[in-house]
Amino acid sequence: MIFLAADHAGYRLKEIVKSFLTFLNMEFEDLGADTDESTDDYPDYAKKLVKKMKKKNDRGFLFCGSGVGMCMAANRYKEIRAATAGSEHAVIMSRIENDANVLCLASRLTNEHAAKRFIKLFLDTPFSGESRYKRRVKKLDSR
Image (cartoon, rainbow, N blue to C red):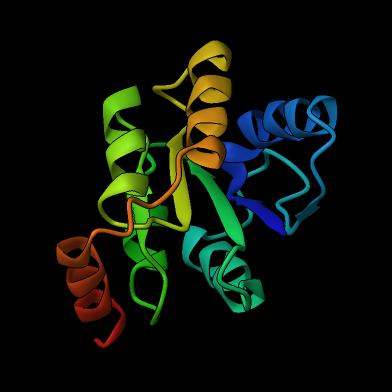
């Protein structure tokens, strides 16, 4: 399952991504926010998302102004490996080497085209499964 959550700053980009996922015929659950009014806090939405992620193949997308706050909040939780979408290469490597399961997008820095590309790369890129990467991911998940 794919889960989406955003604070007020990420609301508009989240809505664009929802339309894109619908176009791709991907099933997802929107966990909020439901407005771009500044009445919320990003840690609350990160927590909602990570609490929903129960299965190994679940993926999450978090949206805030810089992507950094959501990433920091999500990575506080066991078995969550969140990465920021700074470039296509970073997104690909987050999946190949780190088996990232959450991608955090910066709504104030990411245009619609880049966001769609990052989402598609994140969903399509598999974890390599090499023993050295498995060993490292295991250490991340044991914190």
